Image 1 (cartoon, helix red, strand yellow):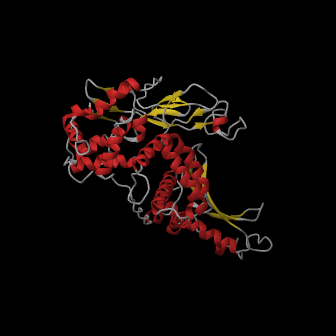
Image 2 (tube, rainbow, N blue to C red; image 1 turned 120 degrees about the horizontal axis):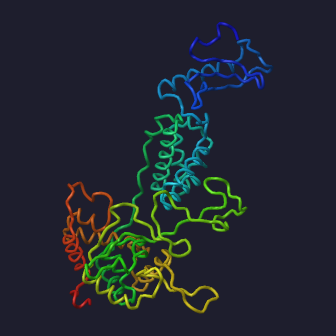
Image 3 (cartoon, helix red, strand yellow; image 1 turned 180 degrees about the vertical axis):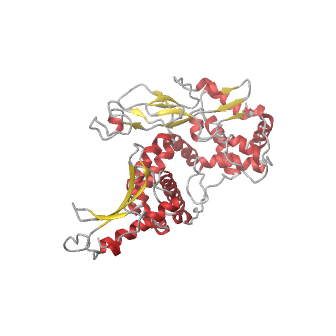
Amino acid sequence: MSKENRVAYGTGSVYQRASDHRWVGALIVGTTIRGTTRRVTVSAKCTCKDACRGTGRCGGEAEVKRRLRKKRQEIERDGAPAEGVRAGATVKAWTAVWLAEHKKHARPKYYATDASLVRHWIVPAIGTRRLTDLTPADVRAVTHAVTSAGRSTTTANAAQGCLLRILRAAVAEGHPVPQRVFLTKAPKLAVSDRDAIPNEQAKQLLAHARTLDDGSRWIAALLNGMRQGECLGLTWDRVSFDKGTLDVDWQLQALPYEHGCAGGDKAPTCERDRPASCTSRRFRVPDGYESRHLHLTWHLVRPKSKAGWRVIPLTPWMEAALREWQPMCPDNPWGLVWPAVRLSRGKTTPRVLPQTPNRDREAWEAIQAALGITHESGRRYLLHEARHTTANLLLEAGVDPEVVKAIMGHSSIVTSRGYMHANHAMKKAALEKSSSLLIDAGPADAA
């Protein structure tokens, strides 16, 4: 290397590697955890047809010096990258690391959603891009991939949110991700046609439900605003007729299987692709996740937020429906209030099993079909729209939004008003008042 082309003393070193003639620039950035000198390196190809062997006329030398200056500026601005962070890591490589760690802590449905966004949109769009080279245009490329496939901007918004969480985790681990990436404007959420069921149609649904043996299931949805998993996971020991309460502290959910043959994050040794086929399979339970196994993959799990863990007052109508249903409820080892009775293939005796969300939705749609009820767009009402109906009735009855929040189990304040404590008596009065908008008969007639 010629004297005029040497780097200044203390700003790093540049040399040409004999094995492949690549130019290498190195910076000393302290010591490793073993006490040895730690170096951060950059490299560039030799641009000469033959090895220039330090003549100073190679474009590779100029390029490696440029990269060395850039790396030095990054270290001065952001500090040295964390030890073990591989230079030039791509989005695809980092998402694999992130998902493996994310799986240990995230709720199963949350993880499944993120993994799907990574697999279908993020990696195909920008998986080959290096973390250090990302720009806002790359973030927008993910949005474009989603919308070009005909998906809504709500899905695009979720994909971008997932990508930015992945990149923030990369920064926390020491990967140098350009900060301007995090300033990219998020896509607007698509307009949703989900809404409360109109009162007249809700009255028809409720009247029909009261003719069914298990009609209390739909009363819980329309009048108490209980989520599907909360209803399907409700057990009789959480129903107190003496206190007049429903304790909503568990919900039904399927937990996925994972390989248990190798343990940890190691590759499976059973030679089976599907975790469910592994002879040592186990359920994937995140850290700190409380669950109770029922049958196959079905578990009772805790609500995802403290607000979801609540006590709902029993209105006279709900109490009457439950008292009527209790002696008819199929016996089951778990004490589920609304289990399913199914005849398995090749069997002659029906079995009592936890109700699946799909069959529960089919029953909800069958009720609408029997009454000829449809959304104004022509579709059937979603089951979650029954929950919208409860909230709408409570607000229409003049109930304070904070009381609505306590009844519905919302984790955020409904309006910008200050917090107001909602006690049991207030919640019971609110539910009875809202229920009267749908039920013309008094409690005595309902019983």
